[in-house]
Length: 132
Image (cartoon, rainbow, N blue to C red):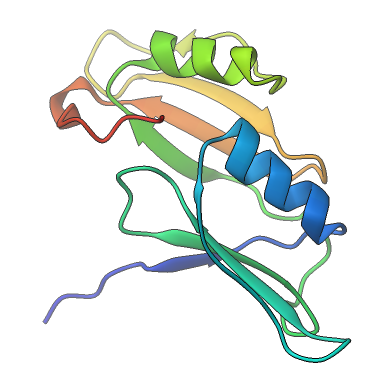
């Protein structure tokens, strides 16, 4: 039996600001943005090439904005990914090379609420699923 990770909940304070950040600056696809009355809204966005999405919402998502830490994205070219993030106005740190082995290099950034993300370079996974 497969156990697949499909969704990570991201607690945010401003849904529209977060939607712009994740879709326009990070290039995630907006799968849906649905409102159920005045008090409930849910959005699902998916990174390019990913089988796992993020969900943000109002009225159904629990957690304090900025408390998500350590979620990791993987790319095959970290320098290209960093350049794309900088071009889109994302404040991203320098590349950290922990070792020379494939998978030993990272960069880090936060969303507008302070949720922290890591991007790991694994060249062996370079199958075309790069960020747009």
